[in-house]
Amino acid sequence: MRRVMTCVAMMTAAMMLPAAAPVSAPRVGIASFEALAKPLPLPYHAGDAKAEIAAARVRAVKAHKRVLIDLGGNWCLDCRLLAGVMETPQMRPFVARHFEVVTVDVGRFDQNMDIPASYGIQGRLKGVPAVLIVDPKTNKLVNAGRETALADARAMTPQAVADWLAQWVG
Picture 1 (cartoon, one colour):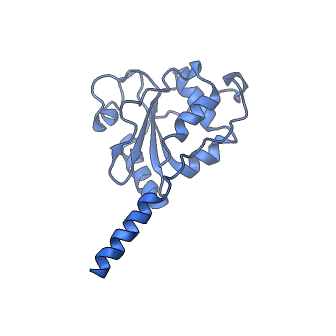
Picture 2 (tube, rainbow, N blue to C red):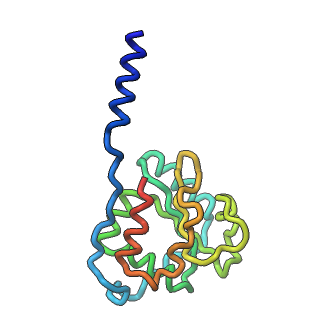
């Protein structure tokens, strides 16, 4: 009986603790995309996307991070702006601390489309970049329904892109 009472007391105390505060994005330090380094990054390349994702999941589990799968193409301005924001001096260490990033070239929506399908995204992507935030332990999509929120990144500020990424830190 004493064990039960101890367990109940510990659970009650744990429920009274404040929830973990959300992680804030660092201040990016630039007000517009015009201030990003030029030329913008070309992050997408041919490769074995499935193998890269599998390796990123293993690293993420060990490092207690999430996997960020960036689906896009070098032809896409919004994709390159996302990459530019993630490469800023303020964001690079933040992203490295919280995510294992895998860029996946989807061509003109005709390559690697089995990747979003494997996370339950049916049909053609609504836009790119499509960012999949994945729990590496369960391989489940954390940001279901919000994958294409950055597909119009150019209508946002660099700080808004950073803030969007920060909300998915696990």
